[in-house]
Figure 1: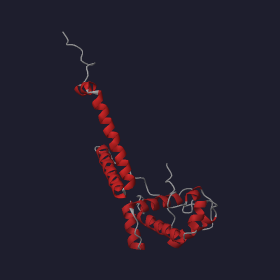
Figure 2: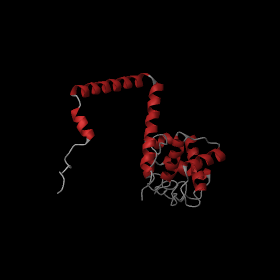
Figure 3: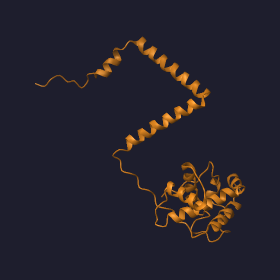
Length: 207
């Protein structure tokens, strides 16, 4: 004869939770609330402490992502965007013509920064050099080539934006698309509204 059905029985943890003193639970909740308030106030008043908390959060997120990635296959790296055969000067000229034909505030901001246009042209050359085999350049490889060839030192986040912008400007109707016939070719493009390299990096087009 089968034994009694135990599927509806509480686990030891559930039973312990239900049997806890309600006053004890309330005191613990109050302590947690006080601790959160104190941490929030100190974070606002102490920049070093705030940075310490942010570093801890980043470390926990990194460890969580690492745990979640165990046993999961690496996602395939997207292929490189095809770029036209341009020199640094030609790439800068096409980008300048592209911006001259746009009335967006972002394009106007970039037009006023020739140093930024030159940086993009250098990133174009570096990207094209590294993607000859059809493989998308890594951020590390781009940063290394910008440093060795042009003397540019860029942070990981900066090189990520540069790569995104090169690919964005090479998208359909962009200044560096293979269909751009000349520096004075199509100037007003879908990517022109995202020419602000500091905060509006164009997105890589999705297949």
